[in-house]
Length: 147
Ligand SMILES: CC(C)(COP(=O)(O)OP(=O)(O)OC[C@H]1O[C@@H](n2cnc3c(N)ncnc32)[C@H](O)[C@@H]1OP(=O)(O)O)[C@@H](O)C(=O)NCCC(=O)NCCS
Image 1 (cartoon, rainbow, N blue to C red):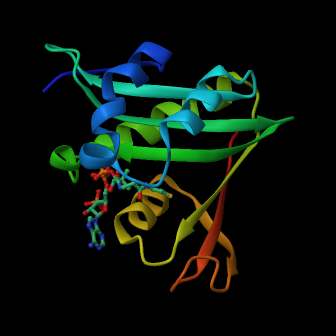
Image 2: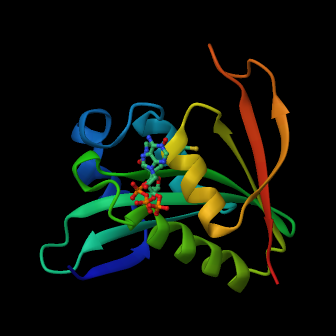
């Protein structure tokens, strides 16, 4: 399978908005994502199947000076565990470097094992825990230094 990674646009969001909760994830609302896409401080990318242009996932960060926070990374449910998340995150980190970002932070639910694994595989380190940040679990803060 060949993939292409591009900057995410409002028309990408239009394409997936009706299946966002069902096929991707339910933790972000379409309007919040739209605001992110329109913000000068945010940068989102999509990963598409090269042949059909189908959107398989997206991810983005918000910039503050020379740091960034990962806002979201989602892979379509039927394409998970095929290293697409890894491709997305690697590309996002590359984009962050190009924008002179030195450190990337994120927060992840301690029960979200695939996400934790993905972040650790890429080189994120745990830097703190927010007890009961989520309903029945902790938030784990992680960061990666870029060179
Ligand atoms: C997190 C997410 C983006 C990962 O995407 P993906 O394409 O499946 O990621 P990858 O295939 O690159 O990596 C997933 C890793 O988790 C591992 N994994 C999967 N299920 C797991 C589990 N139950 N326990 C431990 N590890 C698990 C996989 O084996 C893989 O690790 P490996 O590469 O060492 O084998 C995807 O699961 C997703 O969209 N989740 C819903 C949204 C979400 O929670 N986003 C993160 C918010 S902070």
